[in-house]
Length: 171
Image 1 (cartoon, rainbow, N blue to C red):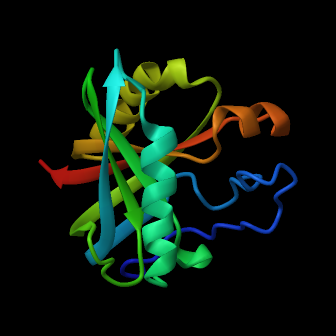
Image 2 (tube, helix red, strand yellow; image 1 turned 180 degrees about the horizontal axis):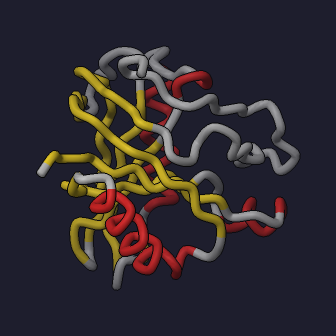
């Protein structure tokens, strides 16, 4: 297991001009080990778990990352989680600190699980994933989601892949 490595992300197949078509190969069941892996943290407001300002927050965050030269297509992921019905956290992987952003570092062991289907299935998927993690003798401290495409691109491509990423703790 290579430290701080992510499965391959291929951004070259982009027929929508928005989100690239996600290639799920290599994303399911991957054991990841992060040691001081750098992310930029952004927060969104939500109403009943539905983000209401993501269309402003994501472009602003991506612009800051690009301006700092801290983006790498080969080491890319945005991990999201709801902290409440009214707030979400989003972690953008970066290659170096980004000025005027909240830079955070993660260390620990993580496991991925690939799902395909509508966003509304996330609670069911989370329960399935937790059961799988427990069967391995671990617990999930937190579960994040990599929403690989926006809803419009998922519709255009005919697939809505979502990668769950669990921070693991040993029992």
